[in-house]
Image 1 (cartoon, helix red, strand yellow):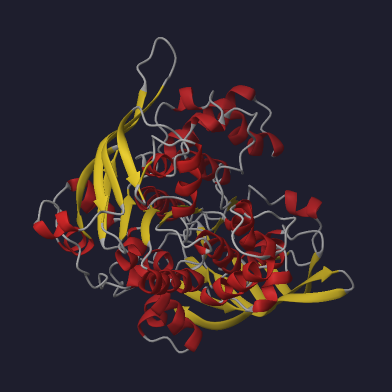
Image 2 (cartoon, helix red, strand yellow):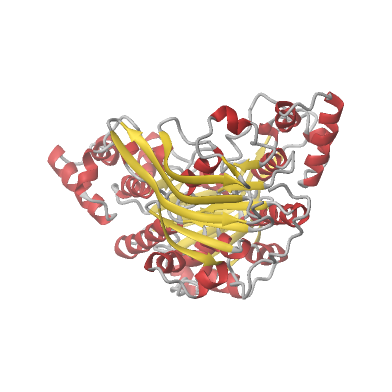
Length: 556
């Protein structure tokens, strides 16, 4: 009997697009042994998720395996139907999806969602299912499992929801666990907790793990072996330590160079006047946040939730100030207040020379010209019905700036500045990659020559190669245009690369602030040190994760 839990041999996958056939995976080979973690890495469109879906019968309806074989243990599942795969999903294969927010039924209680896999596999005893659900929720570290089991997804944080998905995936102790970008949407401390949990389960049960990720740093910390994909082909494969220390492929070398977690150098400090100095007094800050407080009511019998608690900071013109912290620390709430989307309970904000809270109709229009925003999800923030040219020109049209010819010239100039080909102007957002869409969003934000741009997790959804390109673009634009950035992020590795100054938040309060160089080299607060320690890939492993996992009793 084969010792490998999963064997992928010469896998070929294609999608039918209209009358054409698009080849997404070409000749991919790998195996995974019990207790082993294999990482599939590569940028968006490299074939990572398609490979994982082909191995589990989850390909889209227009996708099919056109060559090669997939084996679960000694069982050839290459030509299986969806009905046949249902017999092994949950029992032999567990799947942890990428987005915890959209992967749970919003109208089903948490306990019922976890119990579903048990019910499907004929756990008839309702009391036994309930006991198993509570055991699973407790095992994945969810406090008060009996209370949480009765709650709905909207009542849980992103990290809690991801734990629920893990509980469902391991309910029947499958031999293979597939984690498809399972932590990419989580902040670094929650990400570390989830990855630690998966690793504990692997060690305890000998579970094989197929980790699908664009983050080479996560793969470096957590995998035994790596398979690097590009355009559906294997560019490099081998022991994780060997691949990272001696990459043979130019593409792998580029991925390593682009991974911000591998870059230990802090951005070269620029001249940022220290608060209270004569130099600072002579320069009007681009952003001034003073004693900002935001409370949200929670009903008559409960005290209001204080999401932002007496936060103050200043940002010098032409620099980047980052706000970092875990989910729920108040980062996005501050961004919304700075943008004027909501009024604070107390405190004040001046951005781009405008008092955000004290605006009449005329000053509001001027404020919108001077302060722009780039969102996390470029696809959701771009009108799918418009072509790119119209999307970027819309702010110019709204402010009645220039003639039609002048607007076309301005749009062409800004598209060139963000390194997009002119051919994208006639395309719709759906026809662009994620990186191209984010460049369009940046172009739209900059077309009015704003003084301040707020970037709310603007690169967190991008793979490392595109992320590195966008970060370089932002730096180039800042240097050329003198624009000031307020950079909201849970990714400290990215913050280290792009920011000049940092405020670290914890439960709505600033626990530490200062230059990026000082924060990263000499953190003064325990919360800051904990965030820094959670950055994946900070220390390259000299040896892979322990591979000696007992396999006796583990299903092949």
